[in-house]
Structure formats: C-alpha cells, structure tokens
Image 1: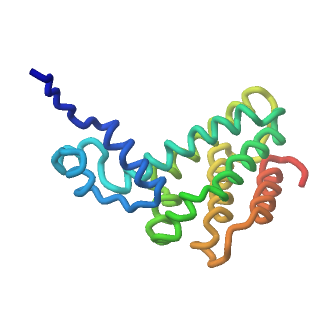
Image 2 (image 1 turned 135 degrees about the horizontal axis):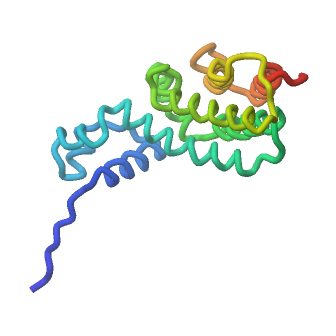
Length: 193
C-alpha cells in the first residue's frame, strides 16, 4: 500500500508562491492564492495579513539582500561609503524590471506600497539606512550636520523621488537624476559636492 502523505501548505509556501507571482508580473489576489494552496482565506490572512502587507514583505525580501550586498561590496568609509551604497542600491532598483512592471500595472497602488510612511518597505528602508548612518557616526567616519533619523528619512525620500518619478512627476526615471540625488546626499552628509 502506497504512503499517501498529505502535505499541507505553510506560511512560507504562501509567501514563496506570492513572491514568484509578483516577480512574474502576475497580480496577487488573496482568495485565489488561498484556494491554490488549499487553505481557507482566514488562514491565509492570519499568515500574511492583507495584500498590502504581503506585497510589502515581498518587496522587502528583494530589497534587503540588495542593500546588504551593496554594503559588503562598497569600499571605504564615511561619506564616500554611504554615497556608494546609496548609488549602488538605487541604481539596481532603478533598472529592476519586475518593479517597473509593478509600477506600470497600477501606479497609484504601487506608489502607496513603495512610499507611504505606513508601508513596510519605506519604514524598513529608513530604519536600515539609519543603522548604517549610526554605524558610520559611531566609528567616527562622519559627523552629519543634522539629526540622523531626519537625514536618513530625507535620503530615502530623495531616492524615491528619483526612482518613482514616472508616477510622482510624470517623467521617466533616469540614472542622471539618481546621480543628482547622490550629490545631494553627499551635501546632506556634510561632504563636498
């Protein structure tokens, strides 16, 4: 007699399936996702929260390794290091095709998920950037002329204004604008343009 072990879906399965869908450009709807996983909608909601939270977690799962890689691969310390990490991370995001597709599918929704001060991605990005700044201050590599949290927040908002300028201002995001943002960050950090 064959062993008929039933494999039940887990929260990790739900996340992985939703992440694959997002990367392919498929729209994520929780009811069909629950059906596909063979679980109830209430169970899926317990696991992932709502759609906004799920997509925020997906975006963070893509952003955090990118940020860590940029930190590991950027040489130096102080202003040059921070600007290097900022440039490398945001340049990769600027050219990330699944993100561009997400923005084009539903610009208003994408802007909310990407930049709202209540969004997982925005909040965690500011927190991560703040930690990097604090580490550089603690090591004596920078002495910013302003509050670290405010500086971090402004840096992220500058990046968002460049990365999502197609939704915010109706103009295509460009590498040249990102370079201008890097110059602005250098100045905010107390460095020279």
